[in-house]
Amino acid sequence: MSAICKDSILTNKYNKLTTLSSVLAYIDDTLWITNSKPNLELIIQIATSFYQIANVKINSHKLVFITNAKKLSQLNFINSSLQLQQPSILFKFFEYWFTLDGKQTKQTKLITDEIINLTNILKTKHITDKQVSYIINTVIIPILEYRIHNIVLSQTTCSKILSSYLTIAKHKSNLASTTPNSTLLNHNIYGIKNI
Image (cartoon, rainbow, N blue to C red):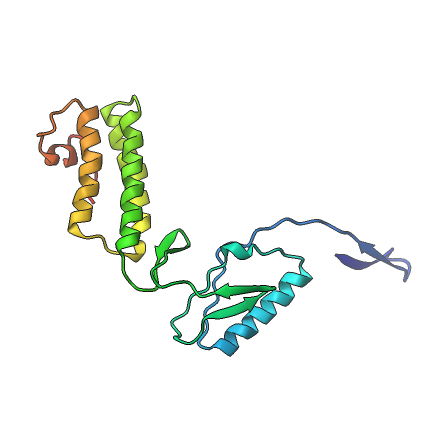
Protein backbone atom coordinates (compact mmCIF):
# COMPACT_ATOMS: atom_id res chain seq x y z
CA MET A 1 0.00 0.00 0.00
CA SER A 2 1.35 3.43 -0.79
CA ALA A 3 0.29 7.04 -0.46
CA ILE A 4 1.71 10.36 -1.64
CA CYS A 5 1.59 13.26 0.76
CA LYS A 6 2.95 16.78 0.93
CA ASP A 7 6.16 17.08 2.94
CA SER A 8 5.19 20.44 4.36
CA ILE A 9 2.54 23.07 3.78
CA LEU A 10 5.36 25.58 3.09
CA THR A 11 7.01 23.62 0.26
CA ASN A 12 5.86 21.81 -2.83
CA LYS A 13 7.81 18.66 -1.97
CA TYR A 14 5.95 15.38 -1.93
CA ASN A 15 6.92 12.11 -0.25
CA LYS A 16 5.78 8.68 -1.21
CA LEU A 17 5.05 6.49 1.78
CA THR A 18 4.98 2.75 1.22
CA THR A 19 4.14 -0.09 3.55
CA LEU A 20 3.84 -3.83 3.10
CA SER A 21 1.71 -6.05 5.26
CA SER A 22 1.04 -9.76 5.29
CA VAL A 23 -2.53 -10.88 5.62
CA LEU A 24 -3.90 -14.29 6.38
CA ALA A 25 -7.54 -14.77 5.50
CA TYR A 26 -9.92 -17.66 5.00
CA ILE A 27 -12.61 -17.86 2.37
CA ASP A 28 -15.38 -20.16 3.45
CA ASP A 29 -18.69 -21.20 1.94
CA THR A 30 -18.47 -19.39 -1.37
CA LEU A 31 -21.46 -19.98 -3.63
CA TRP A 32 -21.69 -19.21 -7.33
CA ILE A 33 -25.12 -19.47 -8.96
CA THR A 34 -25.74 -18.91 -12.64
CA ASN A 35 -28.14 -19.99 -15.37
CA SER A 36 -25.64 -21.32 -17.93
CA LYS A 37 -22.29 -23.01 -18.30
CA PRO A 38 -20.70 -20.03 -20.16
CA ASN A 39 -21.68 -17.68 -17.31
CA LEU A 40 -20.23 -20.11 -14.76
CA GLU A 41 -17.00 -20.38 -16.76
CA LEU A 42 -16.77 -16.55 -16.80
CA ILE A 43 -17.25 -16.43 -13.01
CA ILE A 44 -14.58 -19.10 -12.58
CA GLN A 45 -12.19 -17.19 -14.87
CA ILE A 46 -12.65 -13.98 -12.85
CA ALA A 47 -12.29 -15.83 -9.54
CA THR A 48 -9.18 -17.65 -10.76
CA SER A 49 -7.49 -14.40 -11.78
CA PHE A 50 -8.37 -12.84 -8.42
CA TYR A 51 -7.03 -15.85 -6.51
CA GLN A 52 -3.78 -15.70 -8.50
CA ILE A 53 -3.35 -11.93 -8.01
CA ALA A 54 -4.11 -12.18 -4.29
CA ASN A 55 -2.03 -15.38 -3.93
CA VAL A 56 -5.01 -17.25 -2.47
CA LYS A 57 -4.64 -21.01 -2.10
CA ILE A 58 -7.73 -23.13 -2.71
CA ASN A 59 -8.26 -26.54 -1.15
CA SER A 60 -9.66 -28.40 -4.16
CA HIS A 61 -10.67 -31.37 -1.97
CA LYS A 62 -13.37 -29.23 -0.33
CA LEU A 63 -14.94 -27.98 -3.55
CA VAL A 64 -18.44 -29.18 -4.39
CA PHE A 65 -19.86 -28.89 -7.88
CA ILE A 66 -23.64 -29.27 -8.17
CA THR A 67 -25.98 -28.61 -11.06
CA ASN A 68 -29.44 -29.47 -12.29
CA ALA A 69 -28.19 -29.65 -15.90
CA LYS A 70 -28.27 -33.17 -17.34
CA LYS A 71 -25.27 -32.91 -19.70
CA LEU A 72 -22.71 -31.09 -17.57
CA SER A 73 -20.44 -33.63 -15.87
CA GLN A 74 -17.25 -31.76 -15.00
CA LEU A 75 -15.69 -28.32 -14.89
CA ASN A 76 -12.12 -27.04 -14.59
CA PHE A 77 -11.13 -24.72 -11.77
CA ILE A 78 -7.54 -23.67 -10.87
CA ASN A 79 -5.80 -26.66 -12.43
CA SER A 80 -8.35 -29.07 -10.96
CA SER A 81 -11.17 -30.93 -12.56
CA LEU A 82 -14.37 -30.60 -10.55
CA GLN A 83 -16.51 -33.70 -10.75
CA LEU A 84 -20.26 -33.39 -10.51
CA GLN A 85 -21.67 -34.25 -7.08
CA GLN A 86 -23.78 -37.41 -7.16
CA PRO A 87 -27.47 -36.67 -6.46
CA SER A 88 -27.68 -38.92 -3.39
CA ILE A 89 -24.45 -37.71 -1.71
CA LEU A 90 -24.80 -35.21 1.12
CA PHE A 91 -23.02 -31.88 0.94
CA LYS A 92 -22.86 -29.17 3.56
CA PHE A 93 -23.49 -25.49 3.00
CA PHE A 94 -23.75 -22.99 5.88
CA GLU A 95 -24.04 -25.88 8.37
CA TYR A 96 -27.07 -27.28 6.53
CA TRP A 97 -27.02 -30.64 4.76
CA PHE A 98 -28.40 -31.02 1.24
CA THR A 99 -28.76 -33.65 -1.47
CA LEU A 100 -29.60 -33.04 -5.12
CA ASP A 101 -32.18 -35.82 -5.24
CA GLY A 102 -34.43 -33.94 -2.80
CA LYS A 103 -34.70 -36.87 -0.39
CA GLN A 104 -34.33 -35.98 3.26
CA THR A 105 -33.62 -39.38 4.81
CA LYS A 106 -29.86 -38.84 5.08
CA GLN A 107 -30.21 -35.35 6.55
CA THR A 108 -32.80 -36.65 9.02
CA LYS A 109 -30.47 -39.46 10.09
CA LEU A 110 -27.58 -37.02 10.61
CA ILE A 111 -29.73 -34.68 12.70
CA THR A 112 -31.19 -37.53 14.75
CA ASP A 113 -27.75 -39.02 15.35
CA GLU A 114 -26.36 -35.64 16.45
CA ILE A 115 -29.17 -35.06 18.96
CA ILE A 116 -28.97 -38.61 20.31
CA ASN A 117 -25.19 -38.23 20.66
CA LEU A 118 -25.72 -35.02 22.67
CA THR A 119 -28.28 -36.69 24.92
CA ASN A 120 -25.92 -39.64 25.44
CA ILE A 121 -23.27 -37.19 26.61
CA LEU A 122 -25.80 -35.83 29.11
CA LYS A 123 -26.42 -39.36 30.36
CA THR A 124 -22.83 -39.72 31.57
CA LYS A 125 -22.58 -36.37 33.36
CA HIS A 126 -23.14 -35.90 37.08
CA ILE A 127 -25.59 -33.01 36.90
CA THR A 128 -28.91 -32.12 38.47
CA ASP A 129 -32.36 -32.33 36.94
CA LYS A 130 -32.53 -28.54 36.58
CA GLN A 131 -29.16 -28.49 34.81
CA VAL A 132 -30.41 -31.15 32.37
CA SER A 133 -33.52 -29.07 31.66
CA TYR A 134 -31.36 -26.01 31.09
CA ILE A 135 -28.97 -27.83 28.73
CA ILE A 136 -31.83 -29.36 26.75
CA ASN A 137 -33.57 -25.97 26.37
CA THR A 138 -30.50 -23.84 25.66
CA VAL A 139 -28.16 -26.22 23.80
CA ILE A 140 -29.93 -29.24 22.31
CA ILE A 141 -33.18 -27.59 21.16
CA PRO A 142 -31.43 -24.58 19.50
CA ILE A 143 -29.04 -26.94 17.67
CA LEU A 144 -32.04 -28.93 16.45
CA GLU A 145 -33.91 -25.78 15.40
CA TYR A 146 -30.88 -24.57 13.45
CA ARG A 147 -30.34 -27.91 11.70
CA ILE A 148 -33.92 -28.24 10.49
CA HIS A 149 -34.16 -24.91 8.68
CA ASN A 150 -34.04 -26.64 5.30
CA ILE A 151 -36.05 -29.80 6.06
CA VAL A 152 -39.21 -30.93 7.82
CA LEU A 153 -38.93 -33.79 10.30
CA SER A 154 -41.66 -36.42 10.44
CA GLN A 155 -43.79 -36.84 13.56
CA THR A 156 -42.08 -40.21 14.17
CA THR A 157 -38.61 -38.62 14.09
CA CYS A 158 -39.72 -35.78 16.39
CA SER A 159 -41.14 -38.33 18.84
CA LYS A 160 -37.90 -40.32 18.78
CA ILE A 161 -35.82 -37.20 19.52
CA LEU A 162 -38.23 -36.02 22.22
CA SER A 163 -38.17 -39.44 23.83
CA SER A 164 -34.36 -39.53 23.85
CA TYR A 165 -33.94 -36.34 25.83
CA LEU A 166 -36.98 -36.80 28.07
CA THR A 167 -35.69 -40.24 29.10
CA ILE A 168 -32.42 -38.64 30.26
CA ALA A 169 -34.33 -35.88 32.06
CA LYS A 170 -36.51 -38.44 33.88
CA HIS A 171 -33.45 -40.41 34.92
CA LYS A 172 -31.63 -37.30 36.22
CA SER A 173 -34.81 -36.25 38.04
CA ASN A 174 -35.11 -39.69 39.70
CA LEU A 175 -38.55 -40.07 38.15
CA ALA A 176 -39.99 -43.37 36.99
CA SER A 177 -39.81 -44.00 33.27
CA THR A 178 -43.62 -44.27 33.32
CA THR A 179 -43.94 -40.64 34.48
CA PRO A 180 -46.02 -38.77 31.90
CA ASN A 181 -43.97 -36.61 29.54
CA SER A 182 -46.32 -33.73 30.31
CA THR A 183 -44.71 -33.51 33.76
CA LEU A 184 -41.37 -32.59 32.24
CA LEU A 185 -42.89 -30.43 29.52
CA ASN A 186 -45.02 -28.41 31.96
CA HIS A 187 -43.63 -24.87 32.17
CA ASN A 188 -44.42 -24.73 35.91
CA ILE A 189 -42.37 -27.82 36.73
CA TYR A 190 -39.37 -28.48 34.47
CA GLY A 191 -40.33 -26.47 31.41
CA ILE A 192 -38.49 -28.64 28.89
CA LYS A 193 -39.38 -27.56 25.37
CA ASN A 194 -41.30 -29.89 23.10
CA ILE A 195 -40.14 -30.14 19.52
